[in-house]
Length: 156
Image (cartoon, rainbow, N blue to C red; front, side):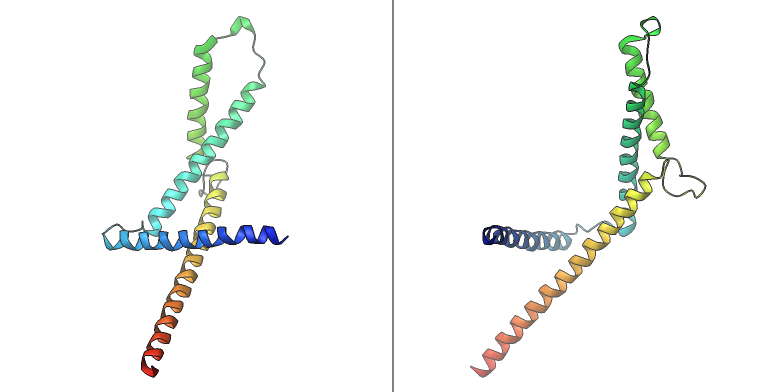
């Protein structure tokens, strides 16, 4: 039991060090004129990714359904027909995923993209809250260290 805890401890320190390094890199990028995308840009990108995910899902669904079709050699179109079907299914998947879902008009085709988007938005918000808390904790520890050093300097 103790071995598991000991093995996890260095990984935790490594993650914390990596986070500090990433934070410093981000601050350096922001100081050099590279800024984080706006919230609207992030939301737009997340929705695009969710719609792409839905298109992949719909394409796989169509491919699986296509495998259940019994074809005869008499009407088989060969490799050209297979290629055409693949392109057709991809176009259908892209079209479906870019259409409004149901009567509400939000989301996309089958509604999967909207659910994926909601989950990504929650995750993004959670990460932002965690980042804010870490920054506050870091700032508080820096302020506490500075206060201790000032107190030592005044008394010493």
